[in-house]
Length: 123
Image (cartoon, rainbow, N blue to C red; front, top):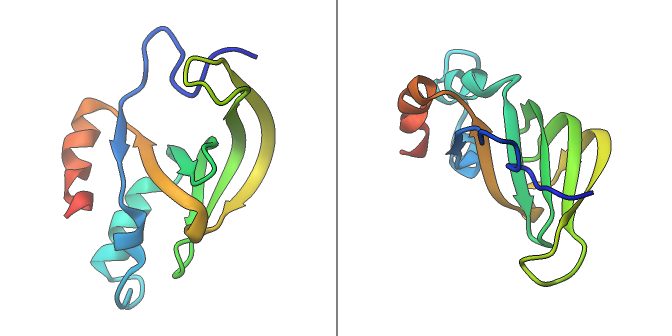
């Protein structure tokens, strides 16, 4: 199938998220600022790139202390050939776990207003 994670007529705004910084240090419990930041990301569409070149687009369900991410209703996108201009092949997966050691990038879909409020996640 052709098209990739952002191939719709009006591409969504994706905010870069450094999830490794969200899980580092002591999380301290429900009152922690890190937990509050992560709660803002729950149930948002998230695009996660992994080290072998694949991308997964799904709904952010949870993250553990090690940085492993669980996406629900996930779709895998991978290049059919090694050339950058080749079409992306997609496959519906459902609920998946992406190990932190494999994750290369992580972006969350949001509106412009939400993007401005989420900028503090990059600090």
